[in-house]
Length: 615
Image (tube, rainbow, N blue to C red; front, side, top):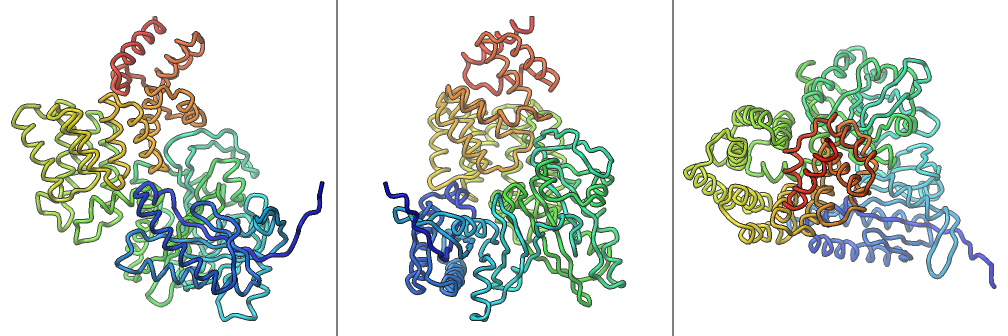
């Protein structure tokens, strides 16, 4: 047996599509076509600079080069080609790429390359910004004397088990950023204006000792945001006045959102005092996202650079620059708070697609404050309670005061949903006149904009009020998903297919909806998918979905009751009683459980069994 290992030094380039799965969810065929076009551009660059692909993974490519200079020039040329492609009005799907380049030891086996040389190139790709290129020091040392490119030193970085010195190639000045090196704690942040830590998995309790030892991490669906104080050491004495109250303004802005929570100020101060590292924040305290902002002031112009990092993946996922005029201290502080809030609402809470769809008719741009009202309006509707109806009505009244929204059709979609809500909660009479009015409004939404959410909305509301049956509703769903849908259309399709007895289709669309909502506030999408999986006899998959989040303090009472039933029919009475007890503590309602189960036979069996268990 031949045990000789074929080793060599190689220059490796890794290119990967940013957000590929989201593009595929929206429009699979168009995304595949777009990737083929980008792949053609990459192969042309590889041919020119003598690179060769040795591995692919659907949305990424790994290539080997004979020289570091060739690899870097190929990466820059490819990113420039992609930029030109995306700027074209004819480009339907605009794909972005990250690129990592490393030179190191590799092992050749069956035409493929393995080893640290490849692994670090992949880590550099993950570290790179969208449309950016990150390289290792081994590549930097070779290319810096032979090119006229601009580089940004990122220092020593550690991604998973790999540690390396990284540099960004600055294709444009806005790509300049600062990352914490391995040797320094992540807080306090040099030159930071404000920072927030977003915790996907909830609140934590801390003692006040200098070691900041975590007592307990409690899971929750609502992200917890940490706002750090501002380091004003890089500002002149005259400009320091602009940062004195920004932290408070950021906290005030973020507190308006019902989808996030904030770390108490005293706890935040202790974090900074004890210089908690990013690794500790993630591992010990459950922190997933870090949002940091750096400030530059020149005369009356200010520029804020906002970065959002995923501490679990150890990479920057969002980087944006906003320019302001220093017209006044308070106005400037408000704009900083609104900018950070906007990044949370549009990007982290994944409202961008719906935001663009619902407000594409507006000639006046939607402000962060207005977007917040829209997000809160949706949150109240999702409660499906009388209180939610009243709150949603109040918020919509305020939204109708937005400038440039004086036409009746401007709010037709929101009015239609609120009218349906009112009928369902018996706040509006469900008579023939109101049903005809609702049907006319639903048809009008399609006439104004034949979008996926408008087709699925017409299907659901018409079906829910009994104006149409399953067959007609499903025809609307087919129109909604001729190409690709969005979070709303997939969720609404899941309800209709489930109510009509198509359990497999219901589970599929519920899964699509959850995949488009990375932050699932109150576990609403998770709950919907859990019930659809159970009804489709996918019990094992349901438990895989919820196992990690079952300890959450806001875990849905209805799912706990469903689990109680499942344990009861399996003869595990003690476990069943414990789950039912916890469901009651969470505010369990038989009515809510009955509404969550679409199949009549299963619904009656579950409710009857829980009555027996409770007796």
